[in-house]
Image 1 (cartoon, rainbow, N blue to C red):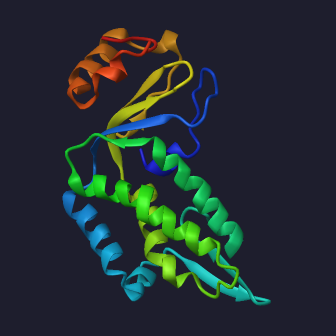
Image 2: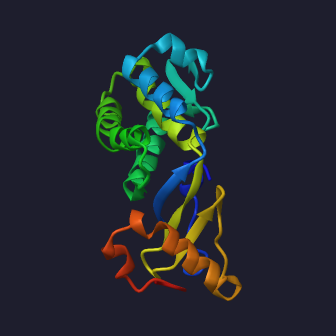
Length: 207
């Protein structure tokens, strides 16, 4: 499951949104995370632009931008508003993997990246998005290049949890869930979740 999907997923039972996402493992190799972080930290605009993620244009003195997430050409102010709105959802993502590099990516998005984009959006005389291209690059990479192999999606309203198994979120109604397999999944990953998680009235099964 790629994190961009988390932007649109709601609980199929009560339609609550957003969910909480707990990540247990990734499909990606460690070197992929290292490469993404290095490019972000080094802020090499030429290398970032060479990745062909962004399309920037100017029409009638207005800057337009689209990328691999916001795929329609969008006036810059609206593009930034959409991006900032999507960043709020990162607050509901919890990386429980041993991967320090992926954790660093999420930490950056929830702190420096968010504040830098918000500050940039308040400038009434924006001439170019180049100053925040590394931030936008990191967001695109996290949402579209990270591949979550296993994890849990949790609805904070009804307390239903849905496993992510082999990259696929298993969001089935209760009557189609396999209690034995679900309990086994929780047991396998219980060391990655704290006691507070299991003290909830988890549905349809708990350990």
